[in-house]
Length: 179
Image (cartoon, rainbow, N blue to C red; front, side, top):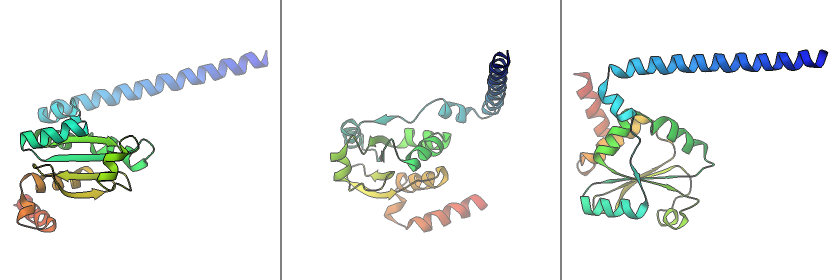
């Protein structure tokens, strides 16, 4: 009789936690939906993922479209790759800016070793910025938070890298925002 009571209690506890988790998740989803309605541009970006391409099709699109590229190397086992996927690549501003202004290529460095070797990828994540001619402009190994990546993308997209240092670009952006 005692074992039946323990299993019943265990079942009821599990059921309680499942219902509580669902209720909290549902409430959070509803709150997020209400917030998103106030910012239509965020909704559009949040509902769309980054348009990732393969290396071959992406490099062709860069050269054909005369658009710069963003090349992201990751692995399945990398903590900071997962963090970048969960935090940076879900940010609506990043999604919108990348999809509008760049050809986006995402490669698993373990599966695409020849391409990773071509770029000298050692630590992951590794992020490469490709010119509209298909040649590398710069790269940044490691995790990049959303606000930093957005500044880097703007710096490259506007061709500001041709006339100033990144630090000068950031100062210029900060002065403009303060006005």
